[in-house]
Structure formats: structure tokens, C-alpha cells
Image (cartoon, rainbow, N blue to C red; front, side, top):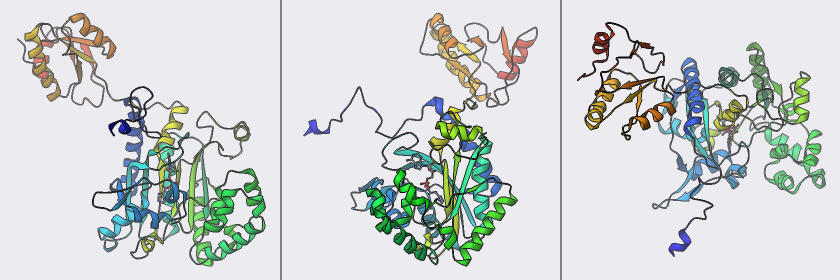
Length: 458
Ligand code: HAM
């Protein structure tokens, strides 16, 4: 029935819940972040990769882990007409590993360094900093097992935030071991948690069975009390993981990168081995923050703003290649939430360069002038001079009003009157530079204007 197809509307159509328009006024933030990423990527030798928005569902259910929140609750999965199950990508690492093997990159000189920037989808409960469509940029290094790479990945994300003028950042690091030491630690943790099951929330009781490390993420106070006494994986790492983590920390020290050890940092995706990290901004960078966190900050403590989500998360995922049915490939990477970064930039009132708006308005009077002006407009474009117009309006008054609104500093009368009698553009080589100088013209300038701009004067 057609009636059933009608969407529920408040007033006109709205974007789907948790999905947002990026308005012209916000594009500058995205452009700025993209440019910083591109520069850093070039410096560190990363090449850009774009993977499809949707992938075969199994890539994520196997790669991220069947008992993770993402796979259990947050995937946008649909069946195509060809009866394949596809999922809108909730993250970028599994697709990058898929692309790595699909295109035989394991046969190229290693490591392979790739970066990406684009939209991702998770069916989350929408709230501040948590959207159903959001954007990430990510950096991944495949084919290298040295902990120096783990440190360099953290450094790259740290540098990007510093370039974006973030002042106070907290880098939290941990190691969650590998297939040698984690199973033993898990057993230890499960027996500890089972003994205290009565003190856990219903969710954590389930987690003890399915994914015990995830109990560390619970925000419930009673679960955090249990967590405080729990055995820490850092004390149960095998020799190899221990050595890797120690060297990773030594590299961070050498880079003078401030970090803190968070023994409860486990990350929400199952593919991690060894190093994991997250980066937070402190309330000193934005406005919000709990009173407690603010106080600790003002006292010079290194406490992060507890009300904020991580801006960046990542780690090592040496087994993901194998999990996806290929060979083992050591790898490490991370990804940043762009909306969360933009939110902090806005909170701290960061000035983002705006696109260069025209300074000259081309006005015209009469039909013939309008025709000529259309052509003249193209001449300006060829000569890379930015100008605005209002060809849809005839009256000069309406055009001048529009000129006022567009913020131009000079109005330029089109072919009906002589061009540039009052003003001329002194520098015009690069309209992106925005430093065209508009000058009042003097004697002899008309010739110059004709020569420079090649305007078909009447
Ligand atoms: P993740 O921690 O799930 O890791 O996401 C990375 C970042 O994406 C988060 O720190 C957060 O800023 C942002 N983010 C995640 N979900 C949302 C959401 N619903 N709304 C807004 N922002 C969000 C990964 O995705 C891994 N693939 C990172 C990685 C790359 N590990 C190794 N390589």
C-alpha cells in the first residue's frame, strides 16, 4: 500500500537519525583536516587508498569479531538482488587488508603504507560524538613487525592533531598480548570475574562468557570497582609481547611523546595483538569537561576529559591477514573520528581558512549588457580572476544589494559602461591565493586593464 511507504515526518524531510549534512560553513574544517593528513601522509611515505563503501559482510564479522558490539549490533547489512550479503563499512582496517591481498601487495617491497579518508557507518545510539554516518581518516602500515612502526603511527596521529593546533593531548597505550599469552590471561580474568559475578552488571555477566576483556569498558561504577582489582594483562605478557611493548615505550620516550599507560585499554575490535592506543583531547582544548576533570587539569594533572570520547584509536593487528583467510602479515595502524575532531576545533574557536570569496561584483544593465557580461564573466575565469554576479536580477538596485550581501569590496560595471574605469585588479595570477589587489585606477590604467584582462570593451 502506498500509504505504508510514507515516511514519518516532523516538518518536511529530515536526514536519517545519526546522519548529518556537512554544510558549506563546515566544509572548511574537513578541507583543513584533509590537507593536514595529505601533507603528513606525503612526508611519511603513505599512499592513498579508497575502498568501496560496502563490502561482503563476512569481511567484517570475521575480521572485527562476532562478539564485538560493532558486529553484534551496529552493522548496516543488506541483501543485494544477486543475493549477496553486503555491509556498509563500519571501519577501514579489514577493507585495507582485503585490498592488500586482493592486489598482491604482499609481493611488493614491504612495508606497504596506506591512508584513507571517508565515510563510515555504525548503527549506534546517536549521542554527542557518536553518529551513524561519520568520517574517519586512517593510516595503516602492513608488512612490518618492528615496534618502531607502532611508535611512528602514534607519532603521526599526534602530529596531525598538533598541526590542527590541539594543545593538550593524552595518549593512552597498552599491550593486549597475542595468541600465545592472551588465552592464559583470559582464563585468569574469567576466573576472577566469575568469582565476583554478583557485583557485575547484566551486560558484563554476559561479557564474562563471550568477551571478558570488554568488561573493562563498562561505565557502571560497580563494574569499575571490580575492574580495579582485576589481574592486568601487562603482568602476563609472553616474552615476545613484553619485549615488543618495552621497545615501543622506549621509542615513544625517544620521540618525547607524552603518553600514559592505561592497563584497562582493550579496544572494541577483536583483531588487535600487542600494542593498542587511544588519543584524547583534554578539556583545556575545548570547552566542556566534568568539573572534576577540569579541576585536575587546572592543578596541572594529566587527567583526560572524562566526558569526551577518544578522537583516535588504533594498534597492531598481526593476525588479521590470517583471520581473513590469507597469510599472516604483521601490521599496525589507527583511525581518527573527523566529526569529533571538528567538534573540538569548534569548541575552542579555531579559525579555519575560509574559501577565497570574490572581491569584485560584475553588475550589468539591460539585456545586451547581460549577454555581454555572461561572456565577460568567462574572460575573467580564463584570466583566473574571481568575481561574483547576479545575472538573474535585472534592476541595478537588486544587484547592488546582492553585491553587498556577497561581501565584495568593489562593484564592477559591465559592458554597458566602460570596464574598470574606477577600479582594476592589480594582481590576478592566482585566484586561490586571495591576494589580488584591487586599486583605484589612474591615468593609463585602462590600457593596462585591457592588456591584462583582455576584456572585450564595447
Ligand atoms: P575505532 O576506535 O572503532 O577504531 O574508531 C576510530 C575512531 O573513529 C574513534 O576513536 C572515534 O573518534 C571515531 N568513531 C568511531 N565510531 C564513531 C561514531 N559512531 N561516531 C563518530 N565517530 C566515531 C577503528 O575503526 C579501527 N579501524 C582503527 C584502526 C585502524 N586500528 C588499526 N588501524
